[in-house]
Structures are given as C-alpha cells and as structure tokens.
Length: 557
Image (cartoon, rainbow, N blue to C red; front, side, top):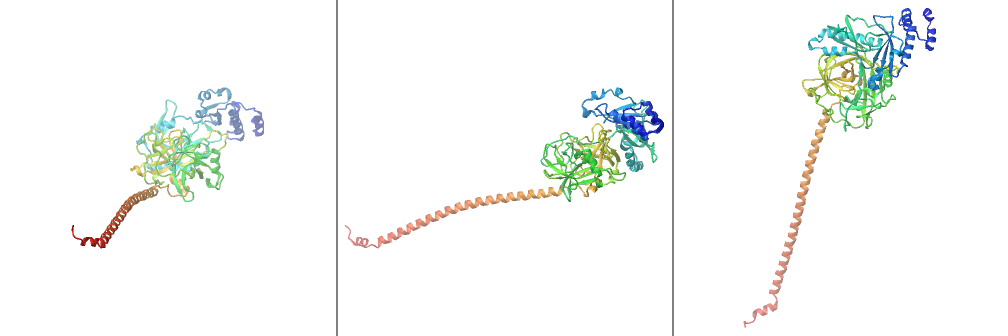
C-alpha cells in the first residue's frame, strides 16, 4: 500500500472507504512503522472493527488489542451477545467467525469471564486477612490511583485488593502466593486496547494482579402488591426495569420519600444526561424528567414520582453514587418492617426498632458481618471485603455511545456462605446493615448498587448518600408508632365511654318505664280515693235525709 511510505491518512481513508482493508501482515507492519497509537493505525483498526461488527447480528462489540508478548501484532477481541438475551447459545457458539474474519481474533461472550477471581475469593481463609497497617496502605493506594486508572483504561471494571496473588491461572502451574496486592479486573486478560498503555507492575510499591471480571448493576425481578409499601419491596420505573425500595426519608421539602438506585428508573442515555447536569443532580421540576415509580410492576398504580436523580462518579476520597429519591403520593408506609420472606430466614434477620447510621470510621472494620433484605433474594448474610472499591460497568453495546456507570469509594461485600449469593439482579437499592449484638439495633452502612462477576456485591456508603441529600437520618417510625398507640388507647376509651352511655341510656329507659308505672299507680290511687270520698259523701247524705229519720222513729211491728 502506497501510504506505508508516506503515512498519509487521507490515502488510508480513501482505501478504507473502498473497503480495501490491509491484510493481517500489512496491518502489523503499519503498527510497527507508525506506532500502534498513531492516527493512521487507529483509523484503520476502527474501520476494521466496524466492518467485523456487520458480519453477524450476535457480534455487539469489537476492539483492537495487543499483548505484552507481541506489542506490534494486532488481535481483535470480538464480543458476542450474552446468552440470556439471545436464548440461542448453540447458534451463537456455532457462528463461523474464522470464515468471516481474516484477522487474528479472540471470541468472548458478554458476561462470561474466567473463574480466576471467583476461585481466589473462595480460597480466602480467616487467618489470611490483611493486617490493619497494610490495609490502610492499600486503601490509600486505591484512593490515589483508581480514578485515573478508570479514565485511562476503557475495559477496566473493578479496582480492589487481595491478600493473594495469582500466577499461571488456566495451566497446571497455577499458583496462589500470599502477598497483598492491588487487583485490577478487566474484560479480557492479557489483551490491551491498542490506544492504551499496559498497567504498571506496581503502584506505590504495591504489586498488581490482573484478573477477569466486571461490575454489573442489579435491576430485575421480585414480589407482591402491598397496600402500604415497605422497605425491601420490589419497585419498577417507566422503563420496566425492577429494583428494590431501599428506605424512607422524611425530606424537609418533599415530605415522605423513597430511595433506590437511579439506574432502576432511568435508561442509559437518561443516566448519562444526569451526569452532565450541574453537580450531577437532576431536581424536579427544574428538569424535564418526571419519572413515575410503581410497586411491584408497571401494571400496578403509581406510588410516586422522582424528585431527585443523582449520578456522580466520586473520587478516591469521595464516594460516587447512583441515586433516585422519589416522593410518595400513595400507599404510604406504616411501619419499618420488611415484607414477609418467602423462604427460611437466616440467622441475623433484620428486626430493628431504631435507625442507626454507620460512620465512615466504623467502615474500616474489614471482615464485619452484614445483612440485607432485597426484593429478589430477600434476607442474606455477607462479610465486608474492602471499603475503597472502584467500579465501572462495561457497556459492550458500543453502537450506543452511552457513558457507563463509574463509581469510586464503594464498599465490597462477599457472601458469608460462598454458595449463597449475597445479592442478585433485582436487589439494587436494598439497604445493607452491620450485624449488631442486638438484632433490634442493626446499623445501616449503605445501599446495593450492583455486583461483580466474582460474586461480590457493590454498596454505596449511606453517610455519603445522606450528606448528598442534605438529611441527617432515615425515616423513624418510632414517633408514629407511639402516636398510633395513643390513638388506639383514645379509641378504646371512646368505646368504653360509648358503652357506659349505652348502659346509662338503658337504665334511664327503665327508670322512665318504672316512672310511668308508678304514675299509673298514683293515678289509680287517686281514682280510688276519689271514689271512696264520693261514697263517704253519699253515706253522709243518706244518713241526714228526713225519710231516713222518720223511718227510725216508727214503732216496731
């Protein structure tokens, strides 16, 4: 090709438009001659990626990469649609990519990663946890570099820590070595995008271990219609995505509100728009969004509408967040209880009487037991793994250039029982609590944002959330319960008074009846007395009559 001598990008564009793509050998020569990050190399590789994507409907992402062993040889990473969305695993697996693609390539299915990270998590033992001083150094290192790393590396999804390093995974020489390290989870291990530099082997003297894995926002499935909504119940947005109503807040401006994750109510482009608004906060009615919230599904009546939508990445020292605050307009809560669990509740179930909020200092207690109730998985127990986690959702549908969810300074929680997930899709927005000595005094540490492909769960600290919302606490039902109790007592007294009134009325009626009887008797007595008096008068009249007198003086015969 003539532009190999001149490096003329215009000639390259003309050839690409005519679909005259270089062969693998010439492409590698271009990379060697002009550099893998040169405009010419990037332009040609991007054109080849776009061309490969047109080969089959199951191909949703293609990107050019190199390896540390072959820095000037380009390989294309081809991502196929995840099985859950196609339902046609056999068809997708049988796509003859080797006949369609005349370049070096590696095939990956979206959502499928090696089990290296999961196996290492499962290998952790209590006596292998990181000591306090080393843990603080790891925290500082992640806080210092995570934001920069996320920006510089497109397919980096998680920045965490571990007490073990992995070497030779996938071979017979795989070995886990004790030693604290920074763990970087990527889309495809060993393959580096051609416009990026490789990770450093150390950051501030702490070694790096690269593994495959990703952050996944949780939003899907759950439960029943509730006459009065409760924390932990399933909610749904206009986009029909499902999540969990985390908690209630008495907001000074909006009144009683519910809290969940913004990605439960918003589409990707809406979420991206919120990030561009001043301070990453959309406030109703100043902005155009008026998102309704339903429980449990969109087929049911609305329970409220969003009043604040927040999407901030955060930094090494400030927690990122993805929040939706919605004003409740119907089916208001009456208690702090969670819905009835459909299955067996584990030890450490949440049955609190008073809200407590976990301070940032308390979050330094790694390996603390935690518990949560989510719409999908209900009650589950977990253990805090790390409290400076950085995550980025890898949206492989790159034909839609939406900015993915990126969150810094998050809490990472692993399952207490490795075979039982701490949370699953549908649990986004659920509250997570530290397990206290008294089950009635659980302390809230944050809300669930999503999970990782290694089985851990991502939690946004509640202290940062309350600071952002400018409220000091979550809604307390204690005063309302007291008032309800007083109302109940008043109602009981009222019932008793009514009963007394009824009894008095009955007695009064009886007295009136008796009075009527007595009055009748008195009238009878008066009639008798009158008759007697009349008889007396008659007797007197007869006794004084002349005829009576004459008769008396006559002789006896």
